[in-house]
View 1 (cartoon, rainbow, N blue to C red):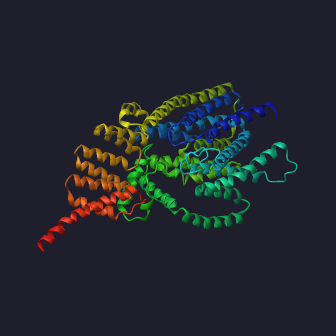
View 2 (cartoon, one colour):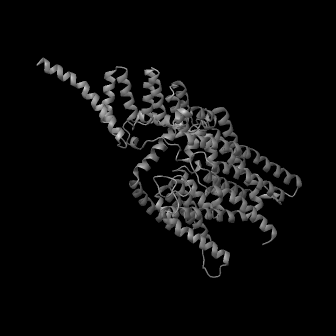
View 3 (cartoon, rainbow, N blue to C red):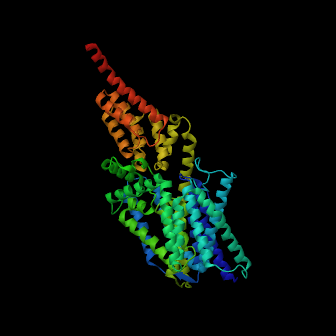
Length: 590
């Protein structure tokens, strides 16, 4: 290789490493050190872009998608500053960090040329190979799982996102094999190593993917392969789609509850979006808006068969719907334009990695990959690469262009470094909370309080802190904290706890309102009805207490448990007590 080629491949390797490293770190759903590292990766991309700008002989031409990305970044900033009433600082920082990563990649990828596509494909396959090995090690008992209910999670916190990553890697590997099909003889040693690696990924990845039982991952992989084969194998693809439809129907009945849950979420998210269709409810407001829409849905459909699959989701399980609820039509239009245009460019240019991008987009329609750093960085890399392919380059040998590019790239690293430090502080605060949450909560209420501004968007922290304040008898302070929790979660237990506080304060009507609100959020739970029954007993409203008791006795619980049986026993006891005096009076008259 010439020296210039080595430099280009070296820069491509640096960019790919920054994009792929988060895919092999442990990814969790709460603040962790991996979040700090991911912000660091954005800063590293900016530094690499500054180096590429100084050495580049070609200058990246602007593209329409660059303007759309900038528009989206500005809109999210305005949404966060002027519209959102929710604690969404971290959501805003993550979104803006991805925009900075896109800008850095747009400056650096043109310097790499075609080398980036080749190295990017290799990086995706290697990340998938590592995750496949991790999954096999977990199944064999060599490494621990990261979820107590599932043996197979890879470096993720459950099998869902893990299966999506494996499916993406398999789609890229299949496209590479299809593009490099031919006899083994006559291949160079690097080509033989590459082909053997891809064969190994497929041989190990398919059984691992099957072991995850993820229908979303299989659908994503099938659609990606169909797109790859469509141009030259129409009949085979149509036959495969027919077989996939049959298998899909069978898979629906195998895990019907999960599929119905996705359907309910799509319906409720659509209603939440229509309530604020243009600008959305505000960044970070999905959980609250979803809870309100779900309460309204079941109020209008109290006998809906979907009641049994209702829940309190943290994620939209549909990336576009999540953007629509929080950012409205404006955000949806930006997201849909960027993703669809990127897919069109990659497919039209016959890029090998296009299959992986399509698999990611399909998976995002049924799951939450865009809520996690690894997939968001991958999507950013694909978008920047696609735009760089279509926009092309112009002459950039003028010194001031190089200097301007380097200055812009370095300036991108400044907010990324600032957010890295802020996230590190937040991670430390969360670690402190986790260390204290299992001990006597009331004794550490002051320790909880000092981290409030850092953890005000974490539902588990707000619930624990609110409970600690309640144990100290600080009922109004507890309700203020729990009310904050209702902004970031649709879990009805926040309202139940608030009702308990109101009851202890002697505010019976406010307690009743809180309990009824809790039941409206999830009408498949009996506990709010039980609290209402106890409230009416305490306030001497015997008729209402008996009405609640009858509802509890007739209640069909989603999951039977000792707690549910105990509530039903108390309700039956109340009904027996109210009937006994009438029987005695009748016997005395006779």
